[in-house]
Length: 217
Image (cartoon, helix red, strand yellow):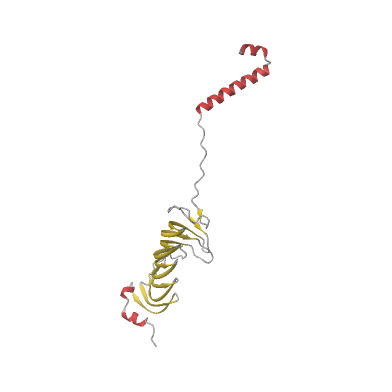
């Protein structure tokens, strides 16, 4: 049959017919031996935004969730009734009014409570490690007995109220290897005495304790 068509078709048509035959054969062979490329999977989005609408959805303890608010933050950990509740980590993004920090501890109804840790960014040239606070929290605020460690080896310890040191406390200077023991007033050192080496709140020298007692009238 091919010989009949060969004799009756013009040369141009013969060439076109031959090309079509080879294209069809190539496509058949290619379809048999080539593997179809699987569509690329889109990267999984691990950033989820907390809203009132999805508040009560089930959440993964290992996934970060964005929590909009006055202090823009994200949280991963345990949840209850749509709020951070249990062991978790909260990262507060820095703004002009709020420093960037990471909170680690136990959360109750959305706020860190009890014993925990808050890590800050290095800001000083003499800081070798990230400064951090370790101690008690109340409703997301440093409140109770705690210690603030500077990134340069110095630290201060005492009682905090709403994030401020108040009352009897200590400040250790790594550079002088001396400890100030005295009274904090609204986060500032007031009356006190310097001692060589490190001192503990549990072993405050008697003269320092007497000197820092409030006057009774």
